[in-house]
Length: 102
Image (cartoon, rainbow, N blue to C red):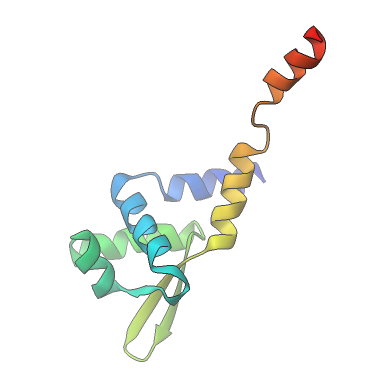
């Protein structure tokens, strides 16, 4: 659990990768080709390929070949899992303190 979360957060650990990931989240389930991501982010093709590789390795992006293109999609299941992980103990100390003070 901790290792998977660390890998996921590390994969999005740069401004450019966050930009790519947010672009894919905005695109929804249809996903985007590399060219479309490049058009929307302005990231150079070789650099973009590097960032997509990182995001795919962290299981944040799924890539599927369609004809000559590769469609990139955000992996909402993994993103939800990471959000749940980081928020799972939200406010636990505050609630514990309130119960002890009460």
